[in-house]
Image (cartoon, rainbow, N blue to C red; front, side):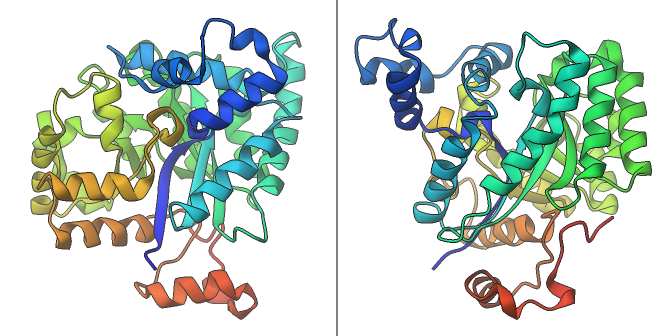
Length: 351
């Protein structure tokens, strides 16, 4: 039984099209009126977009229905699919809690409600029949004001039992005018002992070396080996890991051909930089994590040895799990959690 660790999956993009369609049919028929039938919706939902910004607009469709009342519905189906079809042992779910609060409320009221969202996601993810080790990454957002982003960092520190890190999302091309602000927020997060990752170097417009010292992992980061390989020794020295999401780059128009990733893997392995292979938005792509591995392998982008190294790296860089390089111990701890010793309890262990 293969066991996988998923380090980069968005809560909004994790809803597979069939589940979302059924929810719309039962509860939001206004969102189905533009489609003649399910195949039309699936084609719209999963087709490639021209730019990352166009692609990210799809998140708003899902975020609008992931509310306090509906999150348990979506998370249960997410966890079921991840366990049954993907053999996930470990999953980090990332999202912006502010965007799951009612839009008609004042900003201060929405900030107050963010804690309830984190609590709901945390409790809903703990499903006995699908025993995946899970944790949350709370995303600051490039289009949210400073006050909200700082509240998100504070919230992450208040919920160590559920939250393992903070992130910055919203399209890396939009960071430049607020770079000092985001550096300050990341510095503040590190001062609170929080783990950090961030969407960075995904696109050619999103290359900000100023942010790199504040990140423990890098969300995507593919433009570093492609355009700035001189930075790779620095990443290797600092033990930073790239969260590479292969299908995303075809869906966003960032890459034209999957084979362009071969240079990413080759240069990273040569420099000693770890890569964790991830799905990013498994629902939007209708692609599960094992298929990401298989596609890279069958297209000769990585070898079997490199595949195993990436699987290893995913567990090793998991924020809420200590990996001992023994898959049988991981499986045992999932099936028999009562056997865990203090040295195995890793939520918040890096803080």
